[in-house]
Length: 91
Image (cartoon, rainbow, N blue to C red; front, side, top):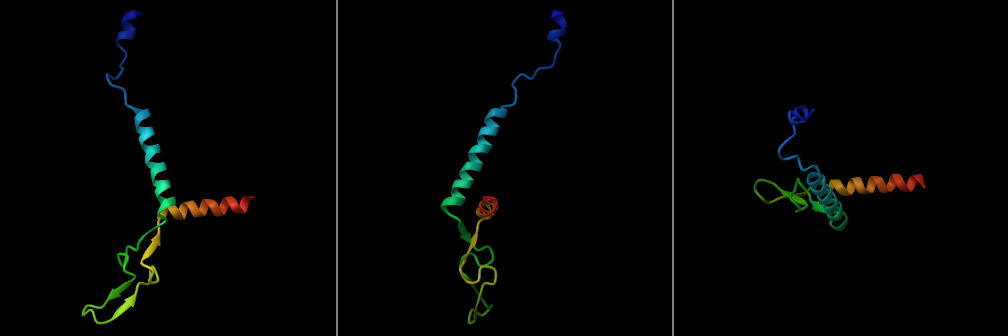
């Protein structure tokens, strides 16, 4: 019986699932806190300026994506707001 146990394949260094799960949880909590603290980010289209210039830089127009504000709601904050609305509707 002893020789059967010795033949089983056990990894020398087991995968650190606990560390990986802890790191992912910490990253998710950190992102959630940052979305709560800083809900807006610069607009990706106008880079936070809120407007575009023509090629000769004489005429400016307002960014249609952010409507001239220069900021956008972050993806994590959109998810946060959606869950809050669903929760509020359920009460």
